[in-house]
Length: 180
Image (cartoon, rainbow, N blue to C red):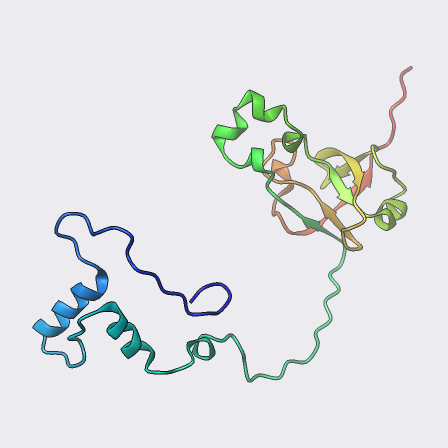
């Protein structure tokens, strides 16, 4: 069954290595040795036809349910963190690669949010916000994000202390410090 929900079959492109055999042949021999009926196939086509027995396999594998669901309202309190793991933060090898860390995909994390949340917090793009009282991140505009959500990348030293990748997070505008 492929990802489109259709049966998909194929035949071997090369002969098995050494004395190895296709799985259906191994099962045929075991079934015959154990005296199990319906295991004496001469080809993969016979085995496949017997498995399917004319049934609509896509209906057997359907995710359809018979349960009637009522609409559920979800209104979590506070700003919700949505985290991703940027491609060049993902593992030690790419984190240590100097050339990869110079690419746009390896930029330090920012606190991405929509204009409505920025206005509520009294900040604009580029201003610093304090996340969970621990991470100072520049705010960045992304109007594709839902209201009351902030996207802050995980797997970076600047955001490691923020805790879970998803859930409520506190954000505060960082006061501008003036030089004397």
